[in-house]
Image 1 (cartoon, one colour):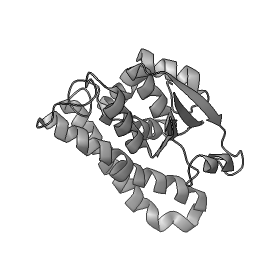
Image 2 (cartoon, one colour):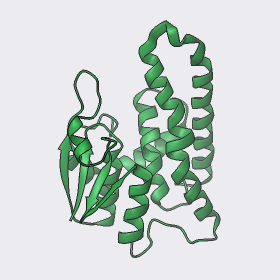
Image 3 (spheres, one colour):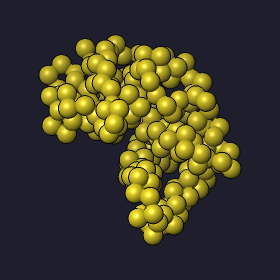
Length: 210
């Protein structure tokens, strides 16, 4: 049985959604952020040395990092290959690209904006560069979603589980104004029955349907 070590308001919500789409049985162990620091509780270090979420256990295996978890689950449980495009196609190239883009290029400026926002005027010299990088990222996402319904073609793939969080976080902070395709994409994800089931089971999640 898969256990998802699930932290509220975190990337691990994507793993619950993927498992619901795959229709794979799982259980959730809930963890709550520290109300003062907003960090994960120390109990997570008993599961994995980094003490971060998401992390899953599948039998005696422990898998951490969202992208690694998504790849593991798709390889083991996506028997029909519903969420991985055919190798050699452009959709597959886009799939691999956005699987890595999500936690690399996309998340970096968003996290920098979050952390430097706590510094007040001390971070002012960095803000123009950070905002420029966020705009470039969102412009690129908009371009991709104008060309196709999802990030790797016209069907849902593993890349979309990865890309959902950067766009949800951007919208929650008011950064998707004027990005029609990005907003339509997030709305479509939020209407999926599997997403809504995962939301109900996962609990507190600030980036869900508005």
